Length: 220
Image (cartoon, rainbow, N blue to C red; front, top):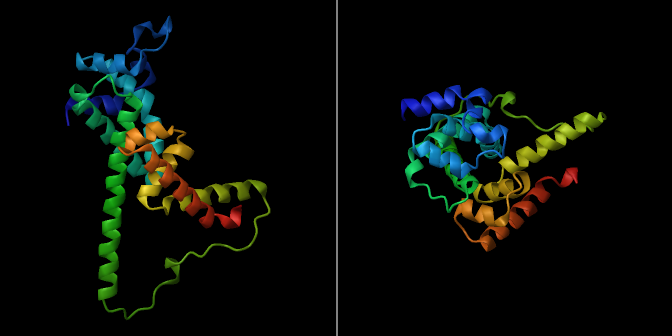
């Protein structure tokens, strides 16, 4: 990872980002493609503006997939590192948002798969050990069946339930449904991000929505 990339990721601010496009004050903001071309020529402020534009959306997107804030911050930073390292291979014929979301998606999927492997190893160890002590009650957290009277609390619980339901989906369903129903991406964009046909995207989103309806039946 270059020192330049690290410095940009750690120090980017609205003030520095505004310097990326001097004409922005009197005209429309510079396009992503313009900023990428400027970055290729060594314009650090241009890359700082790219980070400023996409850091929060990419972090939020990864968080919705991983449900872990620290991980989402780390993977968002890694997304920009990889973008910077591959800057010379980017073609302006691609939609930039599709390109950067593909990088972020691949990183998030890799993280989810690592977690799955760790869980399988952990379970394997669990069942091969002798258990002389009872399982502590704190390992279980059954949902409270009592109805919540406060409307705000009910809304928050519903949102939390939706987040848990999404997090419980297999990755092949979780990623496209988050891109469509949370991020609001088009089917065409999602197909580009995931590298699959629109038909497959629509099929997986339909399946994901069906699974979510089943999981959230008590809230519907």
